Length: 253
Image (cartoon, rainbow, N blue to C red; front, top):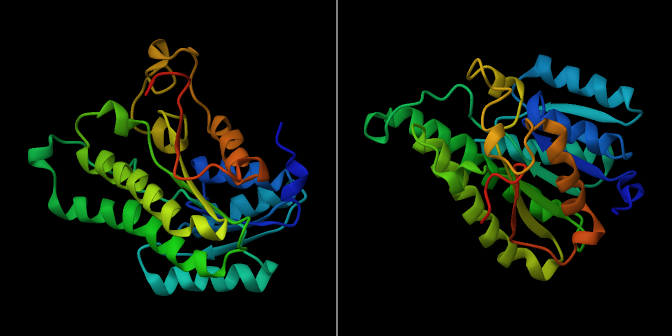
């Protein structure tokens, strides 16, 4: 069992934390006493997450962040250090998802392809690049949020699937490059999860894919939190470059 008291006073940066999985990660770490930095373009949603963290008895700040701009990701790290004095865990969760137009690969909009790659891939890279030089060495943790759709090859949104495949590839490279410092880099690949964004995609979202899972129920945002806590903990200090699929046993890889 992970000793969650180890997160007390640690600083956890969560991108895309104005809602969905990002909010669940923020609340999960806050409940264990971590200081939370919410990085998102959605100021209203970020304020709601700050209020939830405050309710949990932890401290939080919201930093309006464009993850596709290095100046913005650098400013995010400066704000985190100014507020809490350290950068211990970074969760790269920000992504284009629900707003993506689904279409066959030969009909995809090239401009939308570029936007998806900018947020989902470049964003995770820039946040990590800004964070690593300022992270707590030996115990620092970078957790990238990929997707189980990489393994199923979900049709009609190849740009999203490709972007999350790139996140897995980046995770492996980053892990090798920083391993000697003690900082670990891992990825979580959620299956279809009932976030606000997922619920907006289809009417039967709450039953979608349930029958094909070994654990036949809908996936909730909180289902991802335990894996993030483990990867961020001292217990996972010798685990790096890995992708953990959290989907109730739909993908066995």
